[in-house]
Amino acid sequence: MVKIGSYQRVDVTDAAASLVRDLTVQHGPLMFHQSGGCCDGSSPMCYPIGMFITGPGDVLLGTLDVGLDQPVEIYMSESQFEYWKYTHLTVDVVPGRGAGFSVEGPTGMRFLIRSRMLNDAELAYFGLAPSAG
Image (cartoon, rainbow, N blue to C red; front, side, top):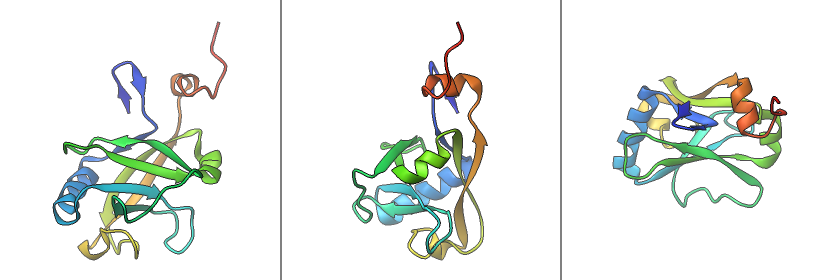
């Protein structure tokens, strides 16, 4: 998503933002960690802040504006980021069984990631392509 004068690596659909707001009422402030494929596949995992501890091997991809006072941070492991660094990720939600450790599990909905390749302007902004000139 393009913001005024800057680019984001992550975005959120209106439906996912609505579910995050509902889950925040129940669980308090939340964060996401994009799973690396173990146990729950490659689902974005949603946790109450403090339940999942990020470390020096995690990359902060950005924040999601879901209409709360505090934006929701989204992380990914550094090794996985090497594979995904050329993509823009959008957190979405669909009907289905949520991931076992993610807070949406009991809701009958599950978060998922939709991705697209970064465009030329985004690649240049993130230092992934030589600037024209």
